[in-house]
Length: 71
Length: 489
Image (cartoon, rainbow over all chains, first blue to last red; front, side, top):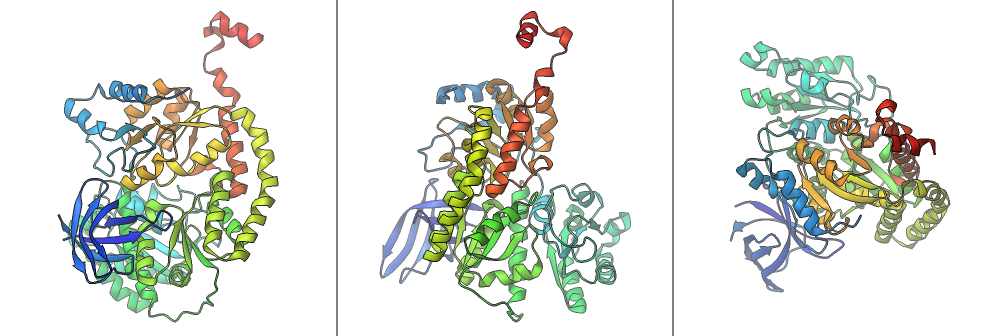
């Protein structure tokens, strides 16, 4: 269960996921739930790996640090 | 020379051929030809170096004491452990600062606990406590102390956090225990991370209880990750101040502890070295809501681009001033390009440095008409390579954590006109007859940042490349007739 930080890039507007423990930063290619009432689920990354974050009730204010599971 | 992908791949294949199968398989992942279209990193990075090969990496202690903490001038950084780590890295990075050394600034001095056998056997905590007292007596103007652990401290399990806590209360100053033992991680990169985390835990958290005395303005910014090598941060700061911004703190070149403590009240964090300081910027963005932005002040093209990008974050007065400043400096840099470009046009450059330079200095070389034929980082992560991909041409050779052997072979085949790397590579390539600049601390020159720095950069590159010594590598009596004739002609 690593802590990951999700952030919106200022310039490109891309969502990035940063895994502090692995010191790894990757662009998020898709999110399972991205709507007003549900946000989270599976995050697919550009390097092919994916992480699962328990869905939240509303899109959070970014950046945010959350617990993630390897999906 | 036009570079194509198959030639670059063939070169990599050729160079790796001498390795045993397993080593070859591992190293193949770290070498690639650039693909500007790629969305993901073209090489594997941030992995342990192969045993038995010579690389140019440092350790976690180097990343913490040498890079992040070391330049903070009004603190005393104790190298906790045997004497060598501190002494052999002392003052080597040329982080310039103002102040009186030994009175209110301590940048070039070496403080160490000089571990002996008995400290390893009985523990060094008592010694550390007495060092803190000694520092307090001898250097009362030091604002704080950081304890930079060397390998033995981690191995014997000393509790430096406890000593820092009790002694800090006793003397009423910030004491930061940093667990940056050299064996942690694969390179200095983890040291940067550990140092950033201690800044977060001991400086920013600690400052939260202190009363903020600073008057907060709308144009407050912080320069982060500029280590003032040869005065770099000063030539950057001048530009930011001219466009109307108020630089509250410099991290960490010529920086002070109060400057760090004041940073959570700025409006924007400007990051120069992303690799070593992105951690603290992320933290400040999440906790204090301070946005951050990477910028690049190498060469006029990138300077103008960055100044416009920074100004766009603020209101129209700043934007107007930025345009004024850009127009004003145009008069200064155009004659420089005019003078040096004909002398440097079309020359090929290979780079192998750390941090941000393998991608940031490219703009400055291109402004002088030079071409980058190979670039690589000592300790980068995947995001650095993603960012590099757009800066260099397609099929350019990219190498991660390159070994001494590989770099030499690449240079033999590519035959660059100039190589920019560290001091470990310097004399090898000079003896091979290739002009060389030590690009870690600007070969004892600098600053290279900003428009002022570009003038020095251009002069240095010309001075190195067009030095008459490169024609004198063959002894006169060993020259063939054609060469001798060509010289007299």
